[in-house]
Length: 243
Image 1 (cartoon, rainbow, N blue to C red):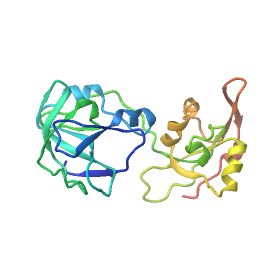
Image 2: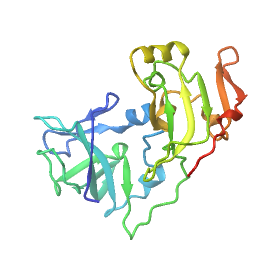
Image 3: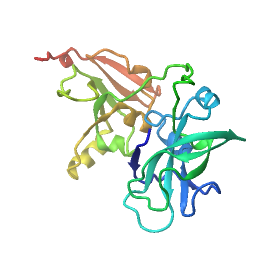
């Protein structure tokens, strides 16, 4: 395990002071983050947490509360020694990038509620859990939608044409537009659309989720009266890729 991920402070995360942590170190509560971003921030399944044993690992979001640090928080692994009353006791199994008040090998205690990822040893295989759909394929979306200033007013799916060699996630072909008023405001302020994960759009507005598997060549516009999307066939969206 032995690695760490840097992350910025999230407005939705709350620090948790735990007596089992070194002085000046706290944990960010991941539950508000997961509530605000359910399509891009997944918490471990209950079956995973129940199956954890000594020798396994868990990851949590650590934060230094004293002194200046470069990063707001760091996601780090803990090697489990024991689990009692909903608390994981073990030692830090990551090297912090910029958190001088804690280092690998120090004893720590974290609540199971603050675990954001799990790692199982070869002697304790990971339990089977229901599959979770991921939403990392890319799309174009107006910034006004991504920032929550507008709902998804119009969406369409065209033949994907943005995937580049080496991309981890492909272009889905989905394009999301805000209301005309908010699109105009973005244009006036020179704010362009963004190429980003579909899950980021869903975090802001998921009323269109039931349409996600529609094939290219369709469009939908939000109808306030019916409180649903009206479908339009758009054969003009069916371009051809030269790849």
